[in-house]
Length: 265
Ligand SMILES: O=P(O)(O)O[C@H]1O[C@H](CO)[C@@H](O)[C@H]1O
Ligand SMILES: Nc1nc2[nH]cnc2c(=O)[nH]1
Image: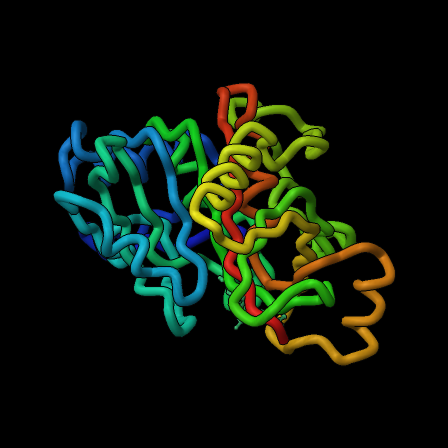
């Protein structure tokens, strides 16, 4: 099971292995975070995952406490440009946030989706109830202009359809059910709120369907046409594994808003 585990790096550099599917292992990760930044600072209400080029969201956190991923047991390294690799604790407009300044893409980690979604379970164990997920994606819909924003209303999780789901393997029921519904994965209340805010600010904002491919290669014109035919609006290589894991935690009252930054390919 070498592919499912992450060697502990940093945080004392001991040789223990963290299994992203094991609840007790993740409690140990959370204990290490709390020990390093303090329990009060480590507590968050809102989790934010910064997509490519969206790291500045983390820079906008007020009174920040920054913990590099290299100091967190079980966290792999992120190599992708625009993903700094920091956990940022603090506040935004008075709300306690924990910001992942850098995400893990399955194509960087041998399609180990459970490992790539590990931070979402960690955020949950730190108290996060609302998750905001952002990404940079390629546009499929002909309505879009370069740089438009799209709120995800639904997804096509291609790797999972081919057996690469973060929920494959042993299910620790403390994370949630074996069979997870993703019918309303993207919270309607928050989507409506984002739409209202965009209207108030005269911003162009669309809702649409996001396709996650395995990457790292971009799509051929024929593949883009295929996804267009099945109703997809934007294409990326992330997000769905995180949202699926978060949705398994729904019984622990997780809520999700996906804020999606989009660029036309
Ligand atoms: O989804 P995020 O992390 O924004 O990154 C997107 O940008 C990279 C490609 O340019 C891919 O990793 C794609 O998924
Ligand atoms: N799959 C995919 N991911 C992206 N991330 C940013 N642009 C793109 C794109 O065109 N396709």
